[in-house]
Amino acid sequence: MITFESIKGNPAISTYITKADESLIALGFTEHSFAHVGTVAVGSKYILETLNYPQRTVELVQIAAWLHDIGNLVNRVDHSQSGAVMAFRILTDLGMDPGELAEIVAAIGNHDEGTGTPVSPMAAALILADKSDVRRSRVRNIDPAKFDIHDRVNYSVKKSELKINENHTLIKLKLSVDTHYGSVMDYFEIFMDRMLLCRKAADKLGLQFKLMINELQLI
Image (cartoon, rainbow, N blue to C red; front, side, top):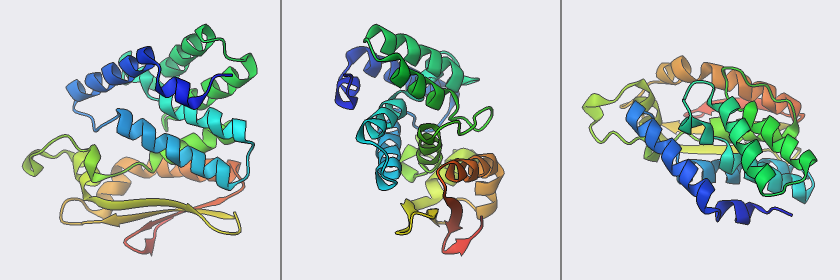
């Protein structure tokens, strides 16, 4: 049985993640390396574990999270689909069970807001964890005067918290935003499609999605 720890420790996979992030550095994107995929793995685990999904499903979503952005090695465009194909090849070579592999590939291939749909609980958890990873430390640009809108929005977020309520009816993304660097409207300009996908993902899990910025409910 392939474990999340074995995937994290796989040298080839680590190389693909590093090289994919290097491609995004060249394009001026925010951080998509081990900090990001690790954060998404933790968030995905939290969601499915809190909702009492089987432990193996929780482990599989962590594997999907760790691999979800390797398609950026090929191209940023359609990176979810190319990443799914890459993951298929990697996990096939490692001898993963076809049923488990199919779940991971479907989740990776559907995590992007451009073409993705929460086709399964795993895909839904991956979407929510991925789209909620907004934080200052993802910004590589050290000169605020040269920030683009993505830099401004990420840098402005002082704290991001994704939380499911005790009754398991609601998942809430709470952001603390320093409006000196980016406005709430900046956030919506680049993240509206992502938030709408989060709402669909929450619905797939039987939850209602709410977005709060500086204690103000916006979705």
